[in-house]
Image (cartoon, rainbow over all chains, first blue to last red; front, side, top):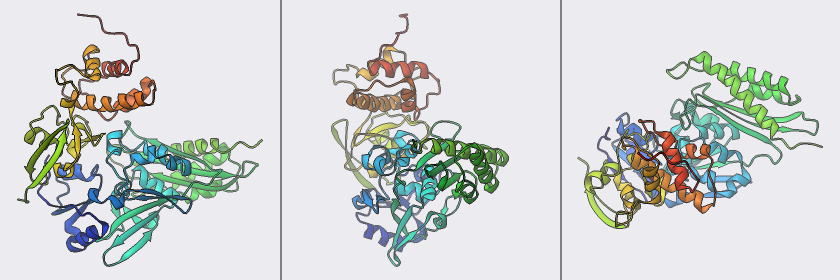
Length: 292
Length: 168
């Protein structure tokens, strides 16, 4: 339970970090909060020859307004999502979601960029990034800067489109639409565990309660978090009522293609996708402003 | 073997310096190099919470940090709770009064978590519900499963009246 030896690098700037990545490429691992990487190193499932620690780069830790939403430096700790008042004001979904990440001791250290770059298929932040079409700002020494969308960024279990020389530097979450209803629902065996299934929804409706826009995303139904186009199509233009929620939840379950593991069978996961999408829709609809 | 690094940090208000490989976990550095064995090592992969310390004022798992990362940091361990004359911190006294420990292995981690939690609720002048207390404790495991008395200890430390166990 002790990590294998490695060469330790503590760059003081993004430029230095990118130079180290350009030099060592796939021999190196980037250390952000370490709440997933260090356990893997303790188990020696990860044995990087070079460890590039981003914790001494202050320019990677910030929250600032961006285009109505918020841009987070990749090294911003997860607890900022819970504690920073501008987060709750612009995107009240984020603090609610953050409280489901591990435990408080994990969130004190874990980072927003680290969780997204690690790409656990049932982690909370990759799901919310997918739901909101977050912008992922990626830099490398040779390639400059590119902005990736979550749907192209998350490739498979723990796999992203990040090249070995690239660094995720910023995550931009848009603001929620002003009159939207939203919800995040997670099913885990124990508090703080990774989810078996999680679902999130954002709904907008006209004065008659007819859905004008819907976003639905699911984690645990596939190797990466997914928007459910079927569920969204089953909602838009329909009255936000039990019949539409049932149809959307069925559509999301039909789109899910989960695998069996020791925690749950594929069938059970698919059923839980239906149950938790249904709950997310009902809760999101209940948050819509009441028309008089 | 990787080149050794020098780590200078402040623990419980006192300056320390040590030299170790970069792969040395902070939990091991605290115990083996600094001789502060109050911090316990349980699972070594961030699940059990026995190694919880305060790093620059916030609880963290010391088994998920390398000692070199704490260079320049201020740390508080369980040894920093009691007064120099041995008087227990109110959180420790509450665990004592409420029998909030059995074998005691998980206790240092619980104490650090509860120390932070009690400070937060007192700063907000808030009286936490039992549910909030259990949520706050959820990152620490007690395999004696003595959670009922641990919850009572937290309630006592928060100034909530609890029925004390009968004197033996």
